[in-house]
Amino acid sequence: MFKNRLQEQDPISEINVTPFVDVLLVLLVIFMITAPLFYKAIDVQLPKETLRSSNVRDARQFVITINKNGTYLIKGKRYTPSDLLKEALVWKENNPGKTAFVEADRRVDWEKIAGLMVMLKNSGIQRLGFLVQEKNKA
Image 1 (tube, one colour):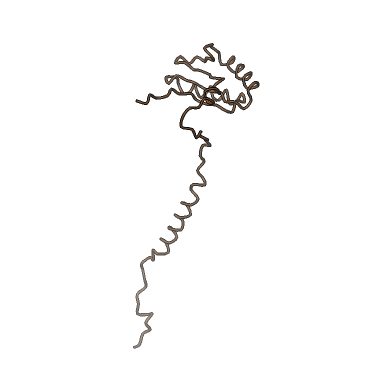
Image 2 (cartoon, rainbow, N blue to C red):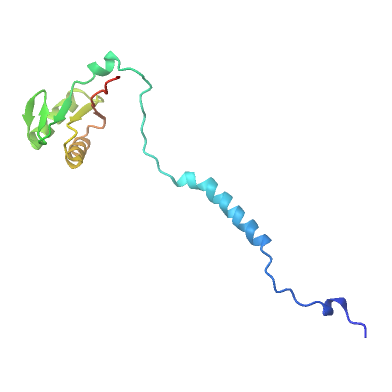
């Protein structure tokens, strides 16, 4: 006649989602904290100047120009890639630690500019700069 109370209840067929949600929130927090650690940024140190100084203009001793036809020039004189490499090596030996600058026409293919940069980096010139035309302040 008397049945045990546990025997009268039907089995619970529902899933308890609270522990599942707790685990998901913990995983979310862990991923949010560790995600920035896996991001590899490009190491760029930008100058903290608002105006061009005379020191920057005087530092432009070695400027390689690429015109719209893809020709390499230094101070108006044309160079083949092999002659340009020789000139860059001579400049590097005489000016260790100085910056070489690249001035390229905006219509030049990026492949040509990237090739020049790789060639200069492989020759040991580790500091490269780009020259741009200043926008009019109108």
